[in-house]
Length: 418
Image 1 (tube, rainbow, N blue to C red):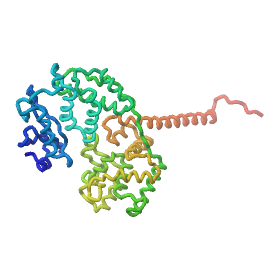
Image 2 (image 1 turned 90 degrees about the vertical axis):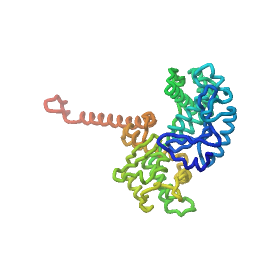
Image 3 (image 1 turned 180 degrees about the vertical axis):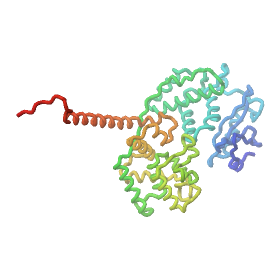
Image 4 (image 1 turned 90 degrees about the horizontal axis):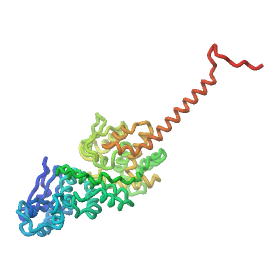
């Protein structure tokens, strides 16, 4: 029998593998190289095609016992004899019947495969959850029973237009559907044109907030004062949160990059942070002398540890209270509308205002796509306009000075009036 203990203790390998349940054939646990573990119910349809019905990720609240109960229901619906490698399930589902006239799967059928072979395998947990949410709320209700080769650009356009009041959701739905068709073309070698590519994205309102010099000063006053206030007193902010905020202010890194930063990743000699798994993948963050000095002060305050999280909770775990501490700090500083992520925007803004090119800013922030950095193009245009105006003033000033200068010898001069 597949037990909770067996599921928890299953170790990831270089390639994915599955553990089957002896007591319930067809109930399996898939262990991914990333360490994630997913429960499935496995059966074969009348065409002897293997199916895996995703039951859910292994979590403290969802273990082998809970997954087994759902698997029993799923396998029972397929008829007696449904199991791993079983000959055939009792009968076709409604989706199979709908797609029986075509070799193309329905959107709902392909979505299961898409989740198992792409979303679970390659996407970060938060991105994977967004994909599943979009599939559940928008893609499947709109297209679930339709075959992949029946959907036209006009169909996608209509679904996209329905979500116009929510442009971000509409664009994300289009994105997920487009990726699904790209994978179908790749996996099944189809020549069907992706119907989502013809649909134009809605314009999304980018909301960026940048700290002014005065706001930075106010925030620093709050953090400096908070360090001296006892715990439980008004204005107190924990030192771990203060360190986290200051690291965010100086580096422009993402919140979880700072919360997950470990001492093993600090390259002291190279003045670099080696992140094994950021949002954009593995990357090395080159940091300033001020950041290294702050890290040195944090290390000294903690007894110069060699391992563990740089900023952490009292029990050494991830600092989930950072958001709450930031809410307190921004209120005290009089900037209640500034999010933690806006500290990242502020670093980009300050860099551009000091003449750093957009391409370099993108590398500083770890952007994989240049389009992401383009959101700051208006700041670069503002700096360029100032530079153009300054240059023009210099030229005009030089011209006027030249006009007032003494003319060279031999040139005609106006006679002096007597």
